[in-house]
Length: 388
Ligand SMILES: NC(=O)c1ccc[n+]([C@@H]2O[C@H](COP(=O)([O-])OP(=O)(O)OC[C@H]3O[C@@H](n4cnc5c(N)ncnc54)[C@H](O)[C@@H]3O)[C@@H](O)[C@H]2O)c1
Ligand SMILES: [Zn+2]
Image 1 (cartoon, rainbow, N blue to C red):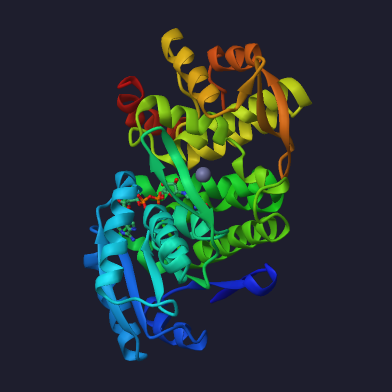
Image 2: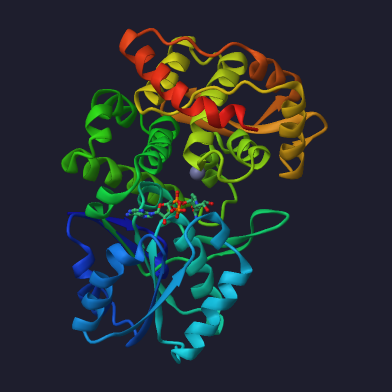
């Protein structure tokens, strides 16, 4: 088992990563002297698979858990679902000392975390992430919140969990497309902070795709360590934390214009990362062969690296960036790559260059094996791309 510390003074906490950890939730909560009454917030896909083990573990350690099940998917990140959770917490007579367990992917983590941050002005909460994306990213760092009609994550808080429990066994039931989407955030950590991780992923991507437990646990632990380090230095994103948004300017805009759910977040940011690497080649002299390595690694992971947009779709994309307050005076701020393992945030990029790179041909990767993988991945995704 790996244990990673998130260093935030009195709000410091640890992330445990390993196999068969769900059954240890009760003892862990006891070790932290959490209150007796609690609520396990989960979704309709995760509940039948894992809520039983979690509830039993809590009961065996003397806790009194209620179970709250929200719908699966992004639509559950709403104030309506939050209000329904509040009602159920009240029914269960939750008190200031009670706590919330978020059992599920990033959606459940964000909703349950927001509920915990606001119910009775804040109760303790514990993250038990069950998707790869949630294990390496959303469960760590304390960003919680929900969407409004006007946009994603517009209501929220910084609210740190008391601890994070990543049971890698839960990934066995994660659908392959969701799993691959998590790999996009993993590659991101290599690009923004750790060239060794990037090189390692180039070697072990087939094992990652097989969900090999040893490879997976060490890679997940490394990603959590990187995120913990960044969050420890800049909890509320006044500077450095912005590097975690690498590729998200384009990624979020793509998600917005294609209708949320068409692209998984990880798919959109895989395209965004290759795009940011190409901008970096134009502006910072980032080597073309490293742009190809990045595209090649996503192809190996079965993720898309490029999108062809019609002029009307490009127009919409720029609008989405404006809406996201990413554009002013014809300039968009991006996180760009100096070299693999090192990025700079807040880099101004003229919209004309964004347009030029967007309309350019896809990056050609060299290895025939990668090209074959890419073709398979692209044909699998083509139907989604052309659908909007
Ligand atoms: N708070 C943050 O810092 C942060 C960071 C990144 C992303 N996010 C948010 O995370 C959300 C995306 O999270 P996600 O990708 O985990 O999506 P998700 O929570 O929607 O989960 C994906 C799908 O997998 C199902 N699922 C979850 N675990 C499973 C398992 N073990 N077996 C089978 N099915 C399982 C879910 O029911 C869902 O249908 C977005 O809303 C995004 O905004 C937040
Ligand atoms: Zn992301």
